[in-house]
Amino acid sequence: MRRIHLLATGGTIASRRGPDGLAPVTRAVDLLAAAGTPDGLTVTTSDVGTVGSFALGTADLLRLVAEVHRGLGPEVDGVVVTHGTDTLEESVFLADLVHDDPRPVVFTGAQRPSDSPAPDGPANLAAALRVAASPSARDAGVLLCFDGLAFAARGVRKVETLRSGAFAAPGRGPVLRVTGDEVTALSRPVRGTPIPLDLDGDLPRVDVVPLYLGADDVLLRAAAGAGAAGVVLQAFGAGNATPAVAAAVGDVVAGGIPVLVCSRVPAGPVAPLYTGGGGADLARAGAVFAGDLSPWQARVLLAAALAVAPADPLPIVTGHLAVDGTAQDPVRRSPRPGAGPASA
Ligand code: ASP
Image 1 (cartoon, rainbow, N blue to C red):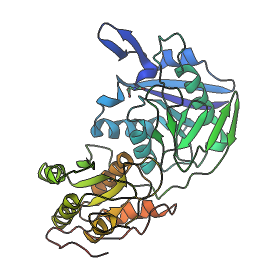
Image 2 (cartoon, rainbow, N blue to C red):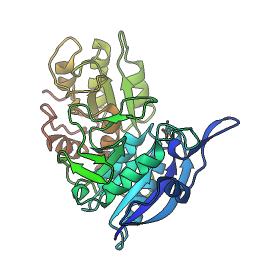
Image 3 (cartoon, rainbow, N blue to C red):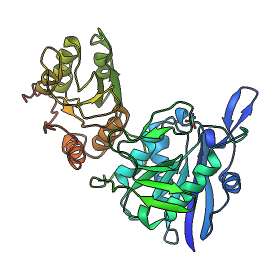
């Protein structure tokens, strides 16, 4: 008999329609009753909250990860977490960054509420429980199981707003397939060294600044002015910005604020290629290219690195980026206050 602990946080999987809109009200024990306990498993339950994941903050996220650690008690073989889909890719990634245990943690959720005529939550939860109990999920870190597939935390993204196949890992693909009772291994995730993050308190502020045609430097400078300890650029294409933003990156980095470059394109790594405001200029200004990480996952990585090493977070970031070779030329730079822009 395998023992799994189920933690519920809210999200659509727990939601029902009320007078003001959908609200997450269903508790873990009722989610489990709807999914049914798969043969050969014993499942215990607890509730961390009943919120939409769009309402979570970074302190909530740390509290959730601490609960996951508590849930992985000595008598448990794995943990399943039900969670809203909107910020699931951030939660699963932070949980994975700090996960230092061979036992699986599997996040899941739903696209249709529990009182819909055809809810997808019960099947997703049943599949997540099977994955958490599967030997194939051991040593795979924290996974996201949805619509019959399980994805490694790193690289998973929400790719559909309403359809049941809500998640994909562009350029990477799923690591496990769930068909009925069967869990089939498809590939092996590559993981970095766990980050020894203190789960009490909060993460430092890291802002994501989007690039769009004609973007000026106002948002980037506002992020620095608002006290961001780090910034992630959601850059064009393979990692390009406007000339105005590229020029401001040098000032921000010189002010001691590390800047990561990701893309607004959903698949593929960034690379420092172009001048005239492009990636080559961003690299010369001291920005670090974040492989194929989404801006949202790069933000979580940078915030965790800043929490652990406020004066020199980039070795942690680049160490994580380097493990699977998707980072192009990650350059180690130390963001000392007052230091001039580094050269690439
Ligand atoms: N649409 C979201 C969900 O699927 C709402 C949330 O993230 O809580 O759960």
